[in-house]
Image (cartoon, rainbow, N blue to C red; front, side, top):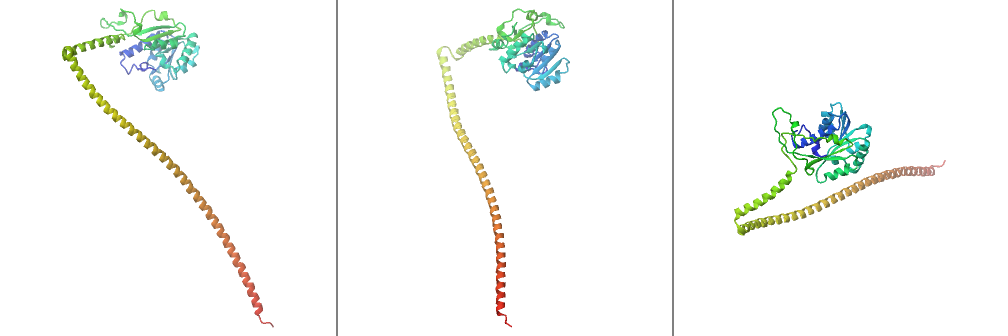
Length: 366
């Protein structure tokens, strides 16, 4: 959503033009919400929702920004007929039925939807079912085009300009100024700040008389002033040229002198630009070399890590093989010891037998 629609009336000057412009749209929309169930898409911190709730039976404020919804619930949720919910505008439209809502309010509408085509279809579904719509579109280069893309398929569509107006007031102290508005010139659609959109509502009643909101602290502002500034700039350039001729000298001599000085300044700036471009080129080469060196170092590090892993695995395999060979050696040694004992026993037995035979032979016969 546009930042302007999220402005808190408590954190900005309530008499500033941006806040006044925004409050006026909410005050106008409240006229269409009398004793109706309202859903506001893109409610922000709920400052505008509070204005709608003064006339509406119930208001549900919806915003995709969780922090904004939390703030709205904390500061505005005390109103019995007001509720806030964190969800996307298009998601909310898709979930709505005619029984749940009478009026949908969505200001700066195109910025609320991730898919304008789907949003247009959902709005058309609701309006054709009898739901009213109050919306606005910023009147920038694509304002009317955006409005037609989003709302063009709605039945009973009405689009009117919201213009900033310059004003003056003469009134005694304590006299309410609301009855003193006298419009000298009609609104100029080309200078509209926003386009206000109505569908599914009685536009003739709502627009029966123009509405205005004036703040004495608001500076006179009008978008047509931009065209006046452009004209003033052209006149200023002409005046500057005339003054330059008067200060530098009449005729071509003064202009030539100024031209020479300008060319010298341009030459100096060009030399400085060339120096900076050379330095930039050198820095680019240095950066490329450093990047290549870094890449090579990373590759070497990766290779070393892999080699270390292979070496570590090889050492583990060798230790396992050594343990296995030691086991075999111990087995062979045990077998050898058993064989040696058997041989000694056998050899001893043979010697004893031989000794017995010798003794028998050498024993004297009776």
